Length: 85
Image (cartoon, rainbow, N blue to C red; front, side, top):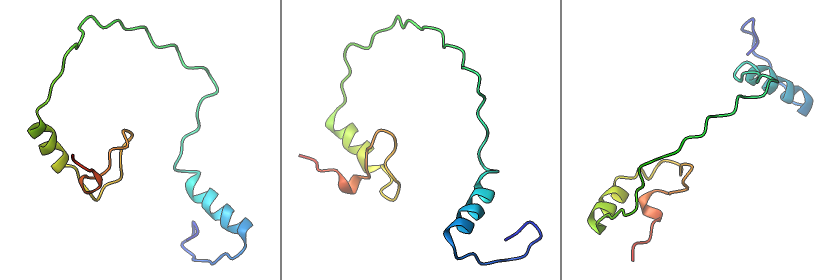
């Protein structure tokens, strides 16, 4: 749909690309050409040396995974795809 509300059909690849570019170019922001400031170094003083979870706690958390959702950055899929030994 155009800015004036008119609907048009495009068939060739170049015009399709232009329609997508016009639509999505307003969605994204322009990044600055400047360099980002370096983040300060953080030294953590508390160490987590031993962590333990019971099988029941892990199974409970796995059962609560939403199976209709995509895996996140940790690549953990929904429960239906997990094999428990």
